[in-house]
Image (tube, rainbow, N blue to C red; front, side, top):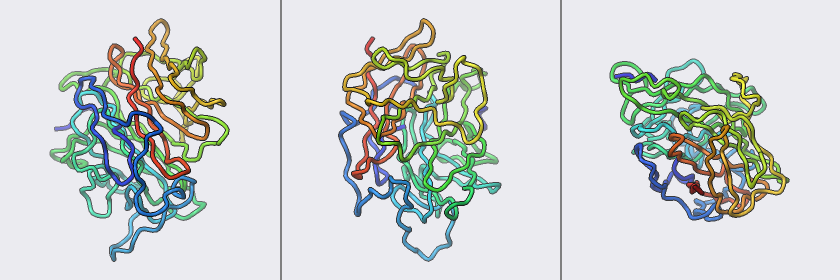
Length: 338
């Protein structure tokens, strides 16, 4: 059958429980952005300074630009992170195609040889966001490697008979030291044309090494039936006109197709974001407000993933990279103030 058409970041491929199905259940996550998880063997700080990760151990098998995993990859490398923002979806796996080759399965489940990726055997449930996993992108200074991404149900082939496909992205170039977040959004409604809510896949560029002088914050808009919105923090508008399915800003809210590679859509907040700040998504007279529980310090980039529907959005804040001290902050489900 063919349809028409995040979870906490933790080094080493481990996850905490997330929201599943269409119910707006709270993600089990660390209590604050300052709570961290252990670092695996070795110093991981160099992995998050746009330096190549350590070379993977030679296992005697042939190399592939799609080999790698959460902690190791042959340099020079880029990163891929995956988010399931598709309401009502089954657990997802990701197929990845390099250049014009065939789609290879198992980026999330780790089910394919030489393609360990994230390594979460049960796949990615609705509301879960994976860690970043490394991918080889060719020699230093080159133009990078183009990848396309396809979301399928866990256990489904990437194409052909029996494939359950929820969407395929266009080609996205990843360069050394760079990264992308790939996400599927919308709602699963079997046998129904859901219009704008039909499942779609997109990829946005990540900022791996933000400047130390400001907090970078962006919001991915996957809230069904909510128009383009502004982001207001403690009364100050920091982002304007985020269009459904994107993290891109662009008043006067024109449906402009971003050029490749797409702009990251970050707000640069010079003083950082204070503890217990109120973040409001404002679309005309429709407003949805949430509390950011802990201070977002300068030098960190964060992404808010907003999915679900306008009357019951699922909104969570995730760190985009390992901080310089070599630890990983968790995704935090933001609590509505209403």
